[in-house]
Length: 164
Image (cartoon, rainbow, N blue to C red):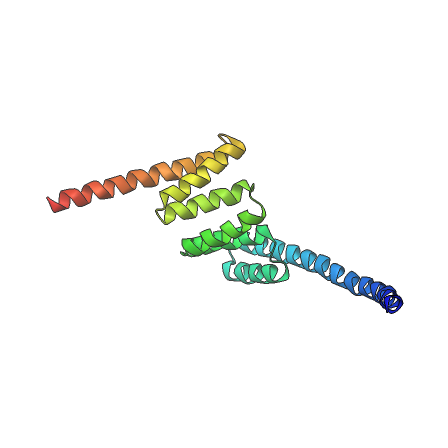
């Protein structure tokens, strides 16, 4: 019985090794395809072809669901298309893969400000401060939070005066 198991094991191991090689190559091919689609989407985004960019980003994520850059750009695109909640969700998924991307953290903070979720925006501001100090991304988000907070206070004051 033990001999049969050993013989079976010896016969099966090389077959399993051969089967796993194409799967690894397919994964690598899919990563390359995903990167190519992302780069095409980025170009379409820069050329203001937003629908094309969105389609290419969806395809990129189907090819490789671990493509953080595709999540970041698709999230930013969603925010620009007046769905900041979806944008923030997508960017957060990308940040789970690559938590140190400064541009993505800025975009997440901007989406949070748009949603008037200042606690969430402050979390992203603190992440930027920790990663890069007073870098351009941190300063941009800080300014956006301050401006939105002032607008929020003005609206609150105007509402109080209207009630009186």
